[in-house]
Structure formats: C-alpha cells, structure tokens
Length: 314
Ligand code: NDP
Ligand code: OXD
Image (cartoon, protein in one colour):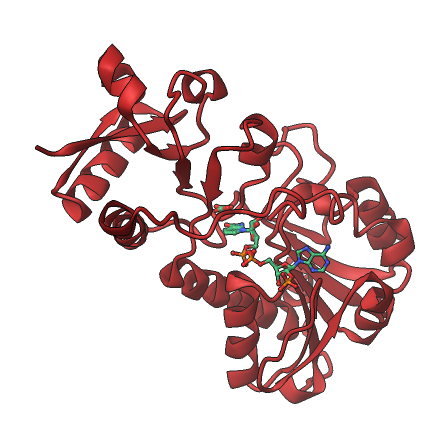
C-alpha cells in the first residue's frame, strides 16, 4: 500500500496543485495529499511532511512527524515557527536551483559591470557619452556566502573572467576564488570589492549585517546585489549610502517585507533595481526529484537527510 505524505503549505490552489502533481510524478509509490485531505489516522501516522511556508498549527497536529522537507532553500521562517526541536528541518538543496542562482548572479553582475543603470539614465537624458570600459578581470566581485548558491555563482563568475573573492563562516577552498572566513575578515572583504553579492541565509548573525558600519567599508562607487534575504541589509542605511554616493547602485531581489510595500522609498530610487524575489525560482520538476531521492532513502534505510543546524540557523 502507498504511504501518505502530507503536503503542508500556505500556497494558493494552483500552486498547491502544481506541486502535488510534480511531487506525485516523482514519487509514484507515495500518496501526497494536502493537510486537509488527511484522515485522523493518517495525521497520527505521518512521519515525514513536505512543506512550503506551512501553518505551524497544522504541523502540531502531526504527532509522529520526524522531519519536514522544505521546498525552499531559505528556512529562517520554518526555524522560527516550528519550535519542536525533535522535528528535523531539511532544506531544499537542488543543483538546478544553484545553477539558476548562478545565472542570476552572472546576469546582474554583468548589468553592473557594463554600466547598464548609467546608460539607461543617459538615454533618458538624451546623453551620448561612453563611460570608461573595464575588463572583467579588473572587476573584483565579493560573494558573501559560498554555500550551494554562492559556490556555484563564484565558479560561474570565475569562468566569465571576473576576479572573485568569497566570505563564509567556516573556512572554504574554491578553485580560483580567494576566500576569507569569520566576522573579523568581513570589512577587509568589503573594502576590496567593486561588486558585493549577498547570498547569505538570514540568521541571528547575519540579520542587519550590512548596516551603516559595514557599508562604510565598501569602496566608493561599489555596487551591491542582495539575493539572500532582505533583513540582512539595513534599508535606511543603504539609502543613506546611495544618497551620499558611497554606493553607485544596488540590485535587490529580497526585502524585509514581501511584496515590497507600495510606499517603500526603494521603488522610486534611481540607484535601486527592485526585483520581485525571482533570482532563483524553484523548478517544480527538479525540486520534486531531489525530494523524491530524500524520501526514497528514508523509506529504504530510515535515515533522515541532513537537517538544518538549529543553533547556527541554517
Ligand atoms: P547554504 O546553507 O548552502 O550556504 C550558506 C552560506 O552562507 C555558507 O557558505 C555559510 O558559511 C555562509 N554563512 C552563513 N552564516 C554566515 C555568517 N554568519 N558569516 C559568514 N558566512 C555565513 O545556503 P544556500 O547557498 O543554499 O542558500 C543561501 C540563501 O540564499 C538561502 O538561505 C536563502 O536565503 C537565499 N536564497 C534566495 C533565493 C532567491 O530567489 N532570492 C533562492 C534560494 C536561496 P559556511 O560555508 O562556513 O557554512
Ligand atoms: C528559497 C527562496 O529560499 O526562494 O528557496 O528564496
């Protein structure tokens, strides 16, 4: 008999149906149903659930739950909302997601490298003027976070000729990338970069990390790309740095409040590019395959996939 996996999500009906279809196709031996479709016995029996921004009160009604598989890479909200430490939280670690993020990092790095914001402004003002040209190897890009997202992005930038440096919590070796670790090295990293790319998770240590103090260490005219989480950057301090001319431009894909409220000053700022959290959209088919492999291993061996370290927060 097929075993049941609850799909616990706060998504609209179309998104829920699309996920259940992709997951069911990747795991024909499992029956994946919404929380509401579970019988009382099925709620009591479920040991694994697949979650996308789940209602924590529904998770509380699954008493045998051993682990949840998140469909997102970032798990800061799950860590806050699922307080029961005996439930393991498994992040989405999908090579396709990392490739998509690396493509976005390259795209927006090129946007800044080839001065597209400045040329767009010149066009609006009917100005015909060539800005100084630099080679990619003359442009230093610092990647904050060299995990699944950042490591692939760093390699992609190296392959495209950029000078790449990277910053992590623990020491890392990546070919072609000069790496630094620990908070004591951050100012040094920031001060070397023409473009800083943030792909950090939101944790107690990274919240408000890029504040007035840190922004003061950026090179004059440096640019920032934030694809990690909005609360890592202090928005007011960022706007001050842009207005003072310390930073030339920022590309923001993530915000403390999403969707970005209509009244936010970021929408209108000429030195800000606002993106609606699209740098690395999850692909249903590839994510479902990753989840299916995790579930199959668990069913065969009883071994849970690697879970998030609740102490460090990622
Ligand atoms: P990983 O857990 O694989 O990597 C996290 C990286 O951040 C690691 O290199 C880690 O260091 C580093 N890090 C964490 N805390 C610190 C710290 N205090 N100081 C220095 N470095 C630190 O995560 P992913 O790469 O898979 O994802 C990263 C984040 O990207 C997600 O949490 C999510 O917020 C965001 N994301 C955004 C998407 C979007 O569409 N905008 C899509 C997907 C993800 P170490 O290597 O030492 O552990
Ligand atoms: C994620 C995201 O964390 O989309 O997967 O931001």
